[in-house]
Length: 242
Length: 283
Image 1: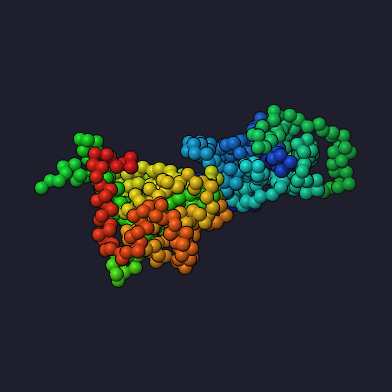
Image 2: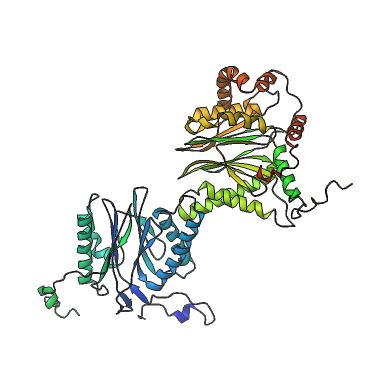
């Protein structure tokens, strides 16, 4: 790809095994926050093939068992692989049929182990993951990166969201956000991302998880206004910089 | 010459539908010194009788910590018990590594039972000669299980295994309905009294018993000997009135000198043996 990247042929001998060296189809930011009754999560439905906006209906948020919700940015097929692991995990957990079940904390830790293990094999799953959930009235929201870095927070965002959405969330997030306020705040973040992140598309879903269960909204679009003068002539005042 | 045609191999059925080698393994559990377990809604107490092999030796450890929330008391072949405890410890650690949460007790017990079952179905193996009382806490509350060499497992409110455990079981059967709401202290007291029931003529002393507790907000730990002695002393005063009513022949021999321990063990097994036609697999 770019000249600053190492040439794969130098790293691997011809008969050696191939690892994921770069992602193919990727999804962009996921934004999530805790609110009064649980967790809200938002992600658009774009799938980029390199820089081409190739797919427009990729679901990047999935329920995991009864208590967890997983959102992913990065390589879509790796996300699908992960979902396969998790499906099996949750199925196996259910088959005990003993009243115990994996909660968001357990799933989050499991994901951390999987991601870190894969990076130790120099074959990472190319994703940033957001894991939200509610179990026994306890809200949980955390993140795992491609290399296994993980943390919990009251609001999280992956990719560009980290730069563009988190500052907004830091300013405006409250513990006792209502559902409507939470959605409004997420839409504000997603609108900023839509304007400034070239891989974002204007078709998104919002997912909600509470003690009652998980709902993922139908895809919808945000109202946009492109008439800002900065949008009409982006190079004004920065002549010759590009 | 041939006592039994069908007991040379674990996997050989008798025409009556029994597996003698497996039953012999369960016999080994009865020969071991007693182990007792009981639980309330919030606590599990394990207790055992320690018997030294000889005057010159110390006794073997019979209660093991598996994890902060799980402990086990064994009766039978101590060596097999240690192997299984190590297995349980590693299962707990692995689960904790993957999910950062404690392994549900019921699941560990199933895994343990499956492990024991395999030994009853392979000609080149032998069953474990140990019975385990597995106590633990998880999100569904306090649990007590009995794991048998046959691969069977059962959940109990209270149970006793090992030599002369019948006396303890009799005591527990009379009292178990109140255990659910027992306090931690009452549970320990009942464990000590049940332990006393299994002693033939010997006086209950902290040197011949071990008591372990786990509960909500209380990680598994073995009570130290001084504290156990204090509890015995405290309870014995109360126990004097209760004991004769509870088990007339248990309180009286407490005053007498202790008979030989080996003889005592053999006596218990003879007492437990008679149900010849019942397959002991379903206890």
